[in-house]
Image (cartoon, rainbow, N blue to C red; front, side, top):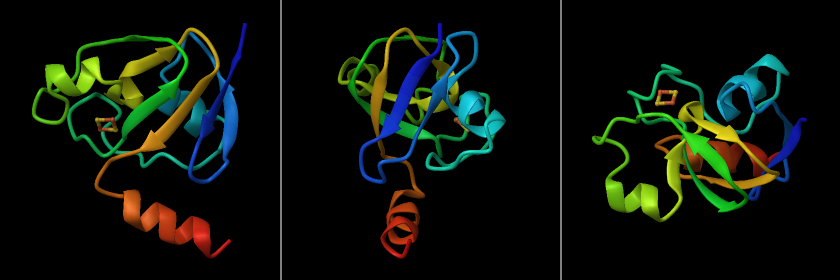
Length: 105
Ligand code: FES
């Protein structure tokens, strides 16, 4: 089963394969919206807030996601695997650049 992953600010949506991280699914489909960095949970550029939906999560750098962040739904897109449709909001350091890009399209 494949789930629908949508980015709230841009309206960008793509198919989320539960066997792949949300970031990996986005990149494999040639889609954009979440900044891509190390893809290993270490750099923090893919930080998002999950507004709706459920997911599994692999270990993430506590430098970028505290336990409190994680409990509030703030996670790294390269370390989460969808278990339902998801709605996300980009939080990482590239957020303002992405939103500026989205507003010019
Ligand atoms: S891409 Fe580096 S933490 Fe996700």
